[in-house]
Image 1 (cartoon, rainbow, N blue to C red):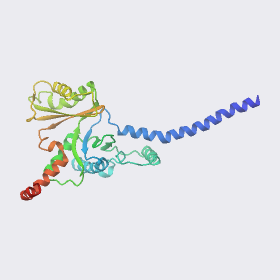
Image 2 (image 1 turned 135 degrees about the vertical axis):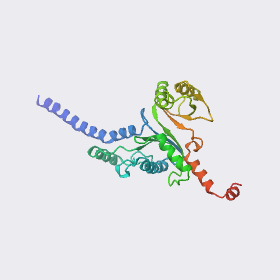
Image 3 (image 1 turned 180 degrees about the vertical axis):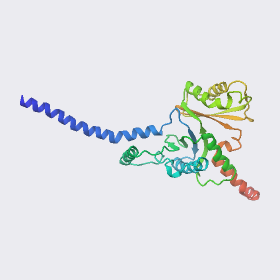
Image 4 (image 1 turned 60 degrees about the horizontal axis):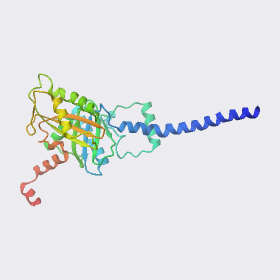
Length: 289
């Protein structure tokens, strides 16, 4: 009896010690990684900006865009840069060790910080970046202001490798239902109601890493959601509907008739065009052959 009793007492004790060690290990190693992955995923309900950039320059572009976006957030919304609005934890080149991530998480619990205006999302696709945004940032007006300034000759000290900026007003799952829901939300303020009649519009679709949708299918669905009383005009549109599909998410926005004039919001092309405008015509002719 004494021997059996000792065995019964020993077994739970060993299991308890070993279990505690394993449980502590799991909490230290798995929880931060899971939270980090969730923070970097694009989710239904998100708002933000798609960005294309030069190959293998994603990390540099993320850092440059963070500076540029914060600069414009200060200009447009009087956001205090010292208030913790510049996101720093989700960049592509963030290689902090696990102890640093645990410390960061514990610090966040002890002293909550202001939610950043801009959060970069880590993607596994080259030349592509996504920044989540939050109010007061409105992606369409925000991107349009940056590009208009570039067209007007405002010198951009950042974003050497950045190309196109695409604002996204709403995001949902890349399904037929998701497309319907996003179209309903995004198009209504521009096309529905007595104050929005007789608009000329066009639709521009971009599909990446998704084989479930075709451009014709999307255009047909979105055009139907625009509703009656409006006319398709591919070159003289009043409003342009942008649809962006990436893997299992889709986003949409409506931009103005200056989209082509602003080089389809391609910052690199706007900067080059401005530099050419400042050059002597004879110099351009000599250099270009």
